[in-house]
Amino acid sequence: MKKYSFVVLISVMIIILTNTPPAQYFLLEKYHYQNADNSFSYSEFKSKGLDFEVCEIRWKRFLDTNPKNKNQTLYRTFTIRPWQFWEWWQYLAHPKRFTLPYLPDR
Amino acid sequence: MKNYFKIALAIIITVSACKKDHIDRPLRGEQQLTIAQTRLWLEANEKSIVKKYKLQWEKAARLSQSSGDRIVMPLSGQPTIGGHPQGFRELSITKSPKTGLLQANFVEFIPDALYFQRKGGWAKADFTGWALIYDRHYQFLSGILLSSGRKVGEMLPASNSQRQQFISKINNSTAAQQPVAPTGTGNIQHLFAPVEECTWTQSSYIDSEGVLVIHNQRSCTQVSPYDDPWTDYTGIEVQPREYQTGGGGGSPTAPEPPAPSNLPGEDSEKVNPKKMMDCFAQLNSRNAAYQVKIMVVEPFPGTSFNLGPNSFGHVAMSLSKTAGGQTITQTIGYYPTGTGLSQLHSKGIVRDNGDISYNVGASYFTDEKGFQKILDYVSNPPLTYDFMEFNCSSFVYEASRSAGLPVPDPMTQVGFAGPGGAGYARTPAGMGSALRTVKAQNPKADITTNPGYRAPASKGECP
Image (spheres, rainbow over the protein chains, first blue to last red):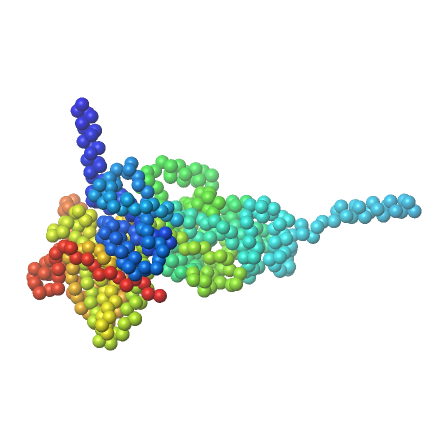
């Protein structure tokens, strides 16, 4: 029982550490977004100011300034990989990006 | 009569049987090479090459070299270095310097990534990179290392034992210990083993056939006064055709230019800082106002910690020019490339930092001359990002100081004091802390220290 608790504790610590800075700086994927024809594209670098919120602001501005552009859907080009435990916090705290439709990155 | 007829018939048959098709006879000596002749020779004598590679004869070209004509034809496929395709390859037909007979070689050119991207192409006069020569069976023969158009080294095939040792070294090392193949993402010397004198080292890359090529490489820091930089030790000359991105250079028969390969970590979000800075020229400089704003994302807002909820933090700068009731603003920051630990020391790029949220900001006004100095600095950013030596804070600080702006030095202690001493680096925490100190000493300074601000949007690149 003690051994089991120890393993669980260590696992939880690893998960927590890998979901917080500075590990996130090195582990976190630079989530990429674009519309269908790539006339809009954005890559996150959350540790350095370029987060999903900036993407939303720029996407809205793009839609406002390009009303005739037919590609009005924002896609994510990254897949959801639940086994990458270092991203679990992103799924919990910032789920909106993962609800975007998926477009394979060409 | 019958006998005469029989004899004549026998002679005719004998001569016909012995007669060789002129196509099979190799072209010799003084005969000039033409594409048509080369094609005939290749299709008759190198059927395996013709069969395997989709030869586009309409893209073939004849190059005049000091050692004789060379017929070249671009081939699909690229060599791979550092996990990324770079360079291009071609089929090359020349006359052997020893026998005078035609011979087919494969040549792979790998321009140094930084040289290629900085120049937007390559030229014989200042080519920097590798030229690797293979025989007709795609066996590596030799290579030439060039720097600024001059030969600085050469490559030879590694022996079997050397190959085994090299492969064993790769297989037995951890990911962090694996030898770093030249990537071109850092100092140009990464392409050539930095040594004080000419010495042999082992290197490798993946050729366009997907084969790992391990070779011995001799490179020198002292540029050797080779008369002919494009000739290998066997005498094969392989001058490349010139190429300029944007379709400006090369002959009409120049090959389809290979797309500039993305460097490791480079993504589509990097901007051309020069094109961004060129936008300011759209406004008349007469009576214009020039503002520089420094924006800090503190790692742990309100503290001088170098690490916090915002990771290591970030420093960006916003440049604004106002004239005639119009304002152009460009907000930029300096970033590493790559992923994981490679970000600590990698190629540095400028990215659009419009709309980012920051918590400490400082505004400065300057004149046209000072503003132009900043534009010049930003237009030609340092090539290498280093986590300690030159990062986003250093970039903004140096750019601002080039104009003489009184931006405080963000140098701060990093790590713990102890054996060996603590390290020092310019950091976002250092910039935030320094600006807070200035504000405390001079409450009238145009410095904001509250969270929730957003950087102005950038105009973007101008054509």
